[in-house]
Length: 422
Image (cartoon, rainbow, N blue to C red; front, side):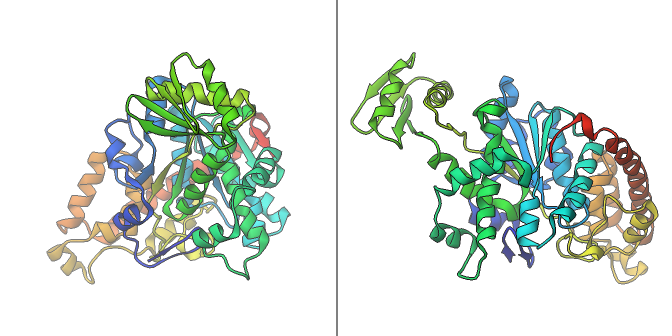
């Protein structure tokens, strides 16, 4: 198993990813969420980092955001739709949505021209609008956002080559542009907390597990770029300053009990309240006061021929831009969890956990849990053969693509109503 931001190979063991990457199982926060998305309910979202910050923000009605992005290196497909659906769900749950078109990454890593990245990027924008993204959002191309590029320069001062080599495996042959992209992506994640967008706040980033190295680096950079750090103590928080004792003295205006020491200050009270006060003080002092970003991790979408669905492998995906009949045809050719013969399928039953078609049902095509359970049961008991199952899925894909094409046409006429930095 190999999982990096640019390559995914082998059979993915998601429990091992949770252990090795230091994530938390998403199941531990699922019961705290009102009306969770089907990707949450059905285990497609398997891990998280600090999602409790988002749950708390939802419950308290305080400001928060959702941010993710798409590299425009090929057509948007059902794998991208997972992330788009997650962004839209979080926006409907109360978060402000930020959507990045990673044209700088596509240019540096894939070698695409700026003209091509813009052309493809617009297709991603129209698709996510067609899927329900509202006007209360920020959509941007990395190369056109001064907020992102300026913040990336600031963040790049906090990381060195040795650290990038340890995280990403960079070596002497790695282009500087590819290394700098890591700062751009950290800036993507953190810039919703800039004063221009309302200041420090919880931000969740829905991504695939291959993007976790970016999250780990960004969480570290969020702490390094901020003035104050937080350490739990009994009854409160210990606050340290990365810029000297003089900044600690500003904490004397706190409306809580503060005890000052040579290298830190201890503040007593409710931890969330302390953290909020300290971040407000840091912003007044000119600091970023970044809240460590949260993240959710979804399973990789299986390609129609097996392996990971990838924009670089056209035969592996159903594009959101496919003609409805072409999408339906691809489903009929998809890899399934069926047996070698119909007789064997009836006797032994199918294996939906290995079936691309059942995954399409689970993640995209069937909203009803009861209907999905019935299909799974019929498959396992040998009552549902692959041919019939594929025909049903192909019809659902065809219907979806027909509706999506209509909504893309509507989105095209609505682009000027959205805040798009391009």
